[in-house]
Length: 252
Image (tube, rainbow, N blue to C red; front, side, top):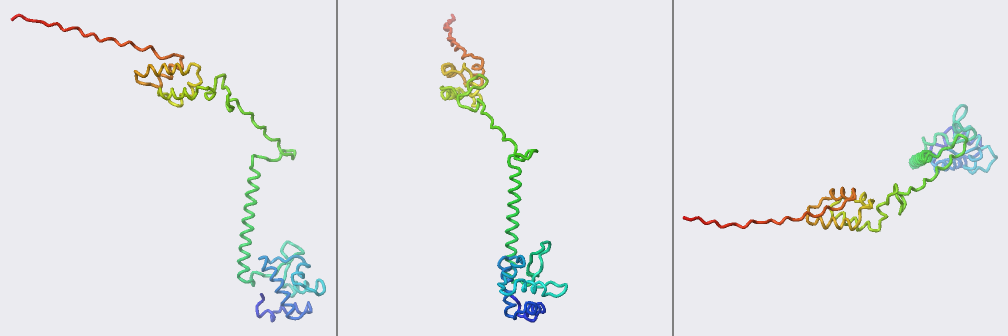
């Protein structure tokens, strides 16, 4: 919105003279152009036609535009000016020196939004460039896709590893684990013993029968199973024979 002193400004009087319009029409044209910039938070208006469309000009085409551009006089900017480095496009001159406070806040928010969008776009480009290393080949064509690796036998159920059965294949694996735990064999050793054909339920039960009368030692059980040995035969208990005491009499 123009200041009360606008009607006495030299630019305003030159605009009225060059466009051959009255003060209310000149002021109304300026207010409509400024409203366009206030609404967008941007001093940019557009080309020659856009300027007159924003002012809702109904006179001779180009007349108002020429008056607005030359209202500053020789060597000075008018109410509009050409956008730097963009020939043929125009913006409001010194919009931020005269714009209301709410327009300046809108401009600040719009810049923050654009910067945020730009940061997101830059991040997306970086992620896209780094995504699985998919870059163009020297001939301009995308590289051939990497073949999907074939699952190894170890990864499949019921597979074999180096010709030996995998621990999970055995139908008696659960019972054997229970017996090994009862014998004191650690879990990290149980998987190794499950792969041995000498590790059977019968053999483990014989160990349990033997170790029920001796201290249990999981490492000892593991070593004997690895060598294919069973528990040693129980040592026969020696009967303790107590010699009968002889009564000795002494003659007094």
